[in-house]
Length: 317
Length: 100
Image (cartoon, rainbow over all chains, first blue to last red):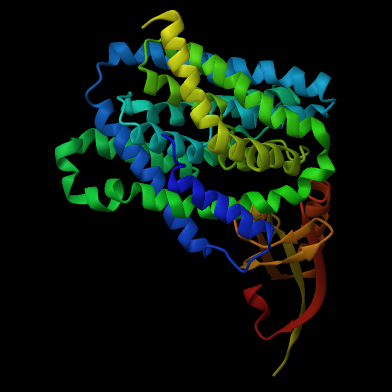
């Protein structure tokens, strides 16, 4: 793909308009509607394919992806932030949770990217989005305060499991799984055909939001900027190895690598605010939303696709 | 027409605290509250409500002075340190004191 995908241009447009302080904002309800459509579509697409997969092939993949992506990676990220970055314990834990979890927006972009290349990929990957969102939050809370009786686990669980992201993804997965591709033809124009257009609107708003984060960048020093760029590349390399060793296709490996490289900016901030309030939300959001998100969609996605190709050439498969 | 004296508490804080605060207010004896979306600027910068992370709400509670004291102290203890929150109280007069 030589030309830049138009959806990315919408993001750049939004970011520039935001930096120039243009009178531009997607109305809040429109942004929420667009997000809901994206989440449902990703769920539906995943659900259709999930129905075709035997559970026996899925189970080892789920186990590896969740164990490494959800639990081990935040534990590797934490000491880097704590000792190299000299962050306070709560902040280091919170940022680790953000990077151990995933971003649906980034997932949507890599999905559009791989689809535009017309290469095959495992379309049930949406399942991993759901599974990877949660474990890092638990790890983050425990890193911040140990297994503490004061943590209101019930509230955290409600915030995470019944938050909009997880609810809509699971709802979409189930509907897609039950209805199947044929059953969904009647709603296909709304969800599948419009996907890239909806994604373009979403990224326009994300560009505007990212621009507002940039003003806080200067305050937080070079470490956070370097971390926000280097960490996703490192995570993508691990994700590439995971995808390759699980026998995923090149497309699937690239998607998994991107997912592992992405950092949450919706579910985790909400959960951390409730459970680790002493962590400064500006630090983690600046990193995940101000640096890593734009880096991933502008540079990361094509780079991780190359990683996936190289891995498959190098190691075979 | 007789008016009776009550207190009004106004809290401006992060949208994410909504459900937790409503629970606290009811537990501490507030019989009701009114919530509106809010925008503004304070020492935590512009909070323009464009998305959940920096959206604000304004909660108003009319209640007995004793309840107002309890709510104020509870919020000061549990939320002031780590959350964007301002709180102020005032005297109000109401027609039907039994409602509060």
